Length: 214
Image (cartoon, rainbow, N blue to C red; front, side, top):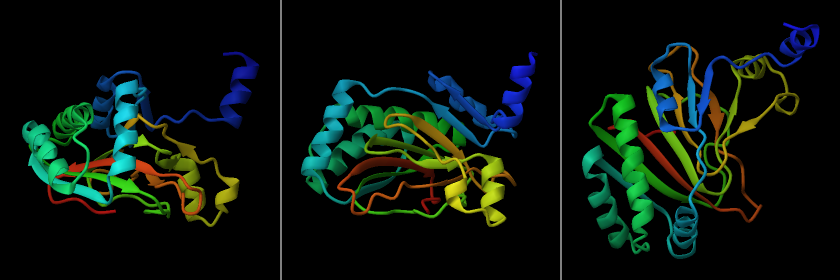
């Protein structure tokens, strides 16, 4: 290792508790006790971006379902109609696929699914979830913000947030957040504050059944 590389590791220590990759296989890293955040770094297809935009234009509020993962597509399609949202089959198919990934990683055949249009601040304080695993993705708008374990410890010690490095998911990226029920070092994260900015978000959250909490 060069002297420059050693200096870089001191100034910017690698984040070894986070796994990132371009395929959904990376979500399996959540099985590793040392990993508290696994991120599938995918980019949204144009059709999905367009579908999310249509939902933001024509939908309001949120849709919640408790469903077997393999039945998520049918249940969500029916829920969209009942809520007066546009049908957006490409979005339904993607949510159903993510429900399957979540169920496999959470080892829970039943999942709680929330698809929500967010226009203000939701869960804006940095926190750890009281769950085992939680899947989150933003189809539109800014993604969830998170802290490295080192910065989370500094925040707990009273260091001002402005002095920490806030990291943020991109729209389309799929993340598995490990919570307090699986580790003593859960990932610390929050929803990005957007009140007054004019931004809107379309966010999918999937938990093991009966664990839908902030």
